Structure formats: C-alpha cells, structure tokens
Length: 207
Image (cartoon, rainbow, N blue to C red; front, side, top):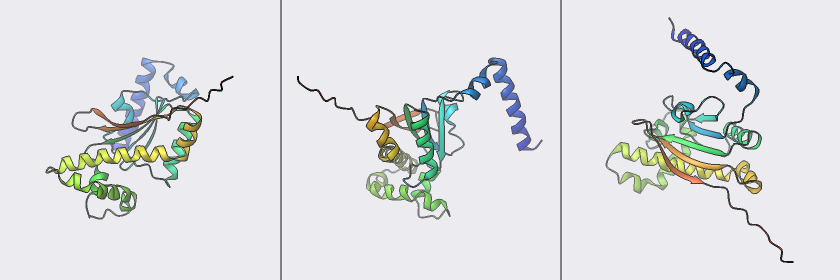
C-alpha cells in the first residue's frame, strides 16, 4: 500500500470513529465556526496545535509557517489574523514556538538555505541583538533554545504592533496575546510572554 493511500484510509477510519462517538460531530462543525483561539505556530510536523492542547476541530483557528513568524508584509499571516480577530472574534492569540526549532537554528548559522534565507532574516537580526547573552552559553542546544524564546517574545511584540490588533484594542478588551514554547522532549508547553489589551480609562464628569 502506498503512503498516500494509507492516509486516505486513515481518514475514513477517523471520520467513522468520530461519528460513532458523536453522531452530530460533523453537522456541528459544518454549520458553525466559533474558535476562541488563534494559533500562530511553526510548520514543524511534530507540533500539531489540536493534538498538543487536547482540543477538537473547531476550537483553534490555525496559521503555521517556518519558525512561527509574524512579519509586517506577510499578507498570508495578516489575513488569517484579520479574519480570526475581526470576524471570528477570537479572545486569545497564541504564538507557539518549539525548542530545537530548525528555522531558528538555521538563522544562527552562516549557512545558506536558499529561499528560506529571506524568510528568516528577521531571526538573524534578532540573534545579533542577543548574541552576547546567547553565545555565553556553552551548550549548543541551550543556545538554540534561548534564541527560540527570544524569537517568541519578538513575534508577540510584532503581533501587538499590527493594525488589526491596534484597531481592535482601541475598541475592545481582546484579544490577549500569548507567547508559548513547546518542548519536543516532554510534550509540555512553557509560557514565555503575554500581552493584555490596554485597560481603557473611563472619563467621569462631575455634575
């Protein structure tokens, strides 16, 4: 059996299992989409958003790219953000990186990876900002993992600066933005950084 055929068979088995567990499962998903979370994660195949958070289809709106970046001219990511925040009205946006990230690791070297070099240029610049701190660590894995955390923080800040987030924050007290890192070794998620919508000041008039 070819690998692609196996995927199709597994899909049928999964769909049947869901119907056996809950006959209305697909009907609910077909008619409504009201996720509470937007997940911006790495494309790494070992970090599936639903599986590592033990959620079901319909609960997390997902965008993934190499090294979980939020880039100011990436229309793909910004379109997903706009749809999730403005139309789906998600309450939380999560940027989730993972330790031992290949994209981050590549950005910390002088090696060329073709077109990927243009995508990770921002991580290279971020590495230069923190190079003294990172290179002081003796272990290469520790250096990469610290850089992963710095990258997640940076992407959270990039998110907060987008027009979509700034406009919605001016009107509503959502979404909260979270920076997480997933551990490939143990499957645990570490909370790194978070930003809450600015608290709106009420104007009182003394009569």
